[in-house]
Image (tube, rainbow, N blue to C red; front, side, top):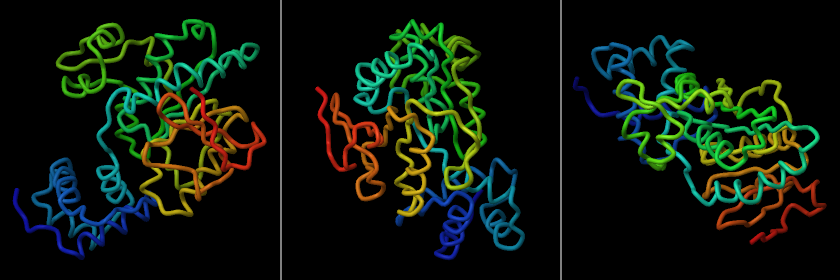
Length: 289
């Protein structure tokens, strides 16, 4: 399948579609990325050429077609236990504190926002099973959401090929928490039972959610403009328990976006807590070693 490279008009069209459907902004210099993703979608739809796909987007766009374009653009690579210091802080500091404080309630809600194909949610589930055996008697839910329905479906299945299963996951954990399924590996029922996956667009209306103890909103805010980032962080605070913890990507921060958070430096990483828990001014930084 061959066709001419994307024109400036084509790139502008895709940017408008992505902004309209997801509120995400595509940076400059992404022409090769765009073309590769669009060619993949062209094949998925059984179209004869990239030009045919672009013609449909221009002449007769439908909600379904624009959603498919946005979906193929927003499914990004991920890996198990991505950013190890985050998981170390979660294991040694955040979860022990929260578990101790929830002893009477015996409920734990963790949100993996922008979960992609589920490696983050599965990693959290494995961490809970490995290091917090007492939670087997609790009501524990890992809420995994993503704008892409295909990503949500893959998260629910928790099934990965040889390349994916080897990214960030040790052979020991693979053999303990996954089973062979044909040419792929699927997480065991005990892991998948902790995860509830559903489609959700962070830039649109949010569904009803329980109070979250931990939120992993990593490597997604960078794609939004400042007002949208601020709105997402505000909504996140409103849906978190007062003593909960928020993890962002290593290149993301609440500073100058929503200062109603306090940064906590721990285990070589940072996480954020609502300032209402400590009476801070949203700009102080605590250091926990």
